[in-house]
Length: 534
Image (tube, rainbow, N blue to C red):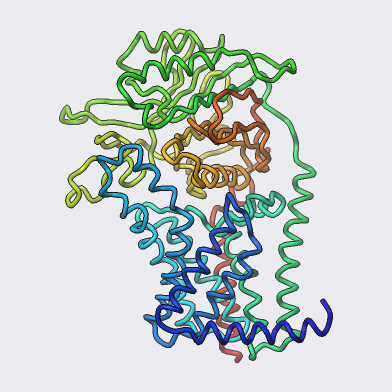
């Protein structure tokens, strides 16, 4: 950049920042929602991360015009509303599988969830405004406030850590390696911090050379992170678990047919046929040892049907297993039926040799948290509600290393995908995510879900196998590299080896969000120190 450009750019940005700060009323709120929607395009499947260099400075300049706490909160709330309205539109697609029953929930899913999630963004801008940062210090305070409330969004009321800003880097694998150190929340913090730095170019309190220098340092930080990540990837091993060959079955069954009374047996038969079909890859390969189906791929009560178990056993590889998602029912303490969203491992004799019950249920989808006011059943359970199983577990299955099973959106929770207490002998060596994204059709949802799951593999240094009814299914190694994949909407199978886990846990795997917490405190401290200096 020439000296002239370095001089004129701050002047132009100064006029832009003044104009945005001067907006009032609905114009300010509409601009905030627009910047929030722009930030969504930085996330999968668009992955346009550079747009954050526009969205976050724009939010800061709008925040500069706030004169009261209410205005500061409103700016952030409308930014968050626009962000989540565009980023989570696909959730409403689930209701159209039975719109006659769930029409009433359409406004709640389309606008209600963004309304609630935007509260976290509103409180983030309110905190940043209240701390009254100066110069570059206000950017540190803003980024720290954002990251704090992003972390809270992932934990409060069972949590919903979807579309965290750091997921924008899932398309840039070298940078994504950073989550092995600081987790996705830490990567979000650094991303918001650097993306907000252009706002300092328009700040009269920051000398021009210093503003350019800080921006260059921020960009250099990510360049260095990417370089380190590139070296990490260059040294990554391609080792796989010996004597294990997985077949991922993706039947692409329409959600409206999945539970239809006349289609359930036919759906199981289709998956059985895929399980024994010849491999599509013409190259010679080792025989399949384990077949894996998606979440509730068997829409019948397996424990109560011996003939069904024997039928599944007939397509199980010799000496191996068929692993599938199933609904499960058992009697409660008073004889009442309890339903579980489960995983079952079936051997060649038809015996169930392993079982796992989903522990992190989807509010409104699998249980109704507001049943007192909403006298209707959960959406995914056809009116019935599911019960929660025990937390993350390490499951020992025949012919496989210990595995941490995760059903559907259990995989989205950072630091909560492995058993809390594990040692070198019992620590899982891979993660298995069964899901059914057929609810959401050909929308952004399945792409976002796959990207989130992929990030867990990098955080934990552990391969992840994902099998989805309609996709995206695939195998991801411990560095986030995709070694096998079936695209969205494709009907078929893919055979793949199981990658080895890293020999030792990553830093994030050892300390969890501790590194993020330290980084968060550092940013708050730097921002407050700059405020007192000015």
